[in-house]
Image (cartoon, rainbow, N blue to C red; front, side):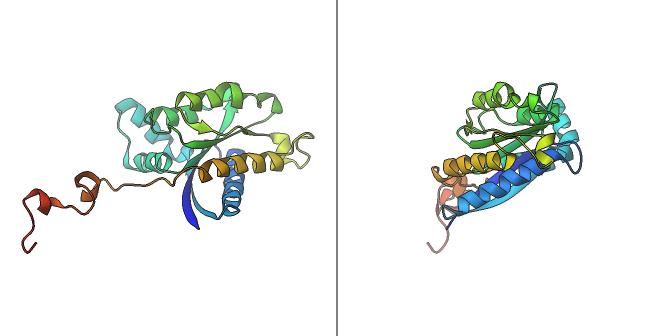
Length: 214
């Protein structure tokens, strides 16, 4: 069984939040869908509210504090991304956009992405297609066809008569799992490993003309 890593970015502001609830459901179903294809997956969840000050400092100084740098590396090195944001004023939250802005513009190129969003009313459901999807298209990420929107009524039990939240979650998760399965696993290189910049099997001794006894 192969191993993949899924990064989950949740931009909810409260704790607990419906944004995190949706993110967790998408992650759980994605892991399940991957397991059906004999692919094991680990999940790393990043709550952006925990990095709000660091994100602001990064935008002001151009440098990411250590905790934020670790979170960014988790996202850009993952095999796939699940990104979930609340909808404010008909679009993604400022915290969500600010995090995207501190990423390298090429860091999500080709990466499978499952988009999720939530709001108080289903009237905001189109925000996925007119606001969030174009953002990931600009970054050349590979957003799957299904975006999963959850309104307050979806958490009340009745849900949407046409496509209940559970069905939408399953469909989006399956599409993300399929996209991950089609790609080679992401390799993570240690920048401090000499093999990264000298070549596999080589060391500083080779640069100095060979090691004693060789």
